Image (cartoon, rainbow, N blue to C red; front, side):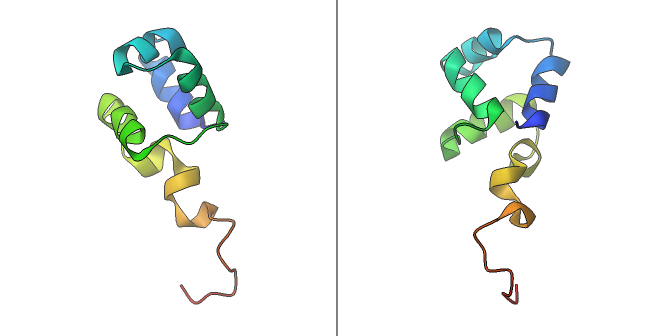
Length: 78
């Protein structure tokens, strides 16, 4: 679950359906993105970021923060 996305939506007192209408997407898309069952396209992620006026790494830390990268070699010197 992408808790920051849910928190931001609830702080604006929006349902998933209302948010979907505002972003011009399907409600099921909002649900799947919030639950982490679907990753947004770069354009879709930008829509969320612009709507909430928040950084991408805050809204989608599992995608945009290196520390959540489970595929990177742990012995790497990065």
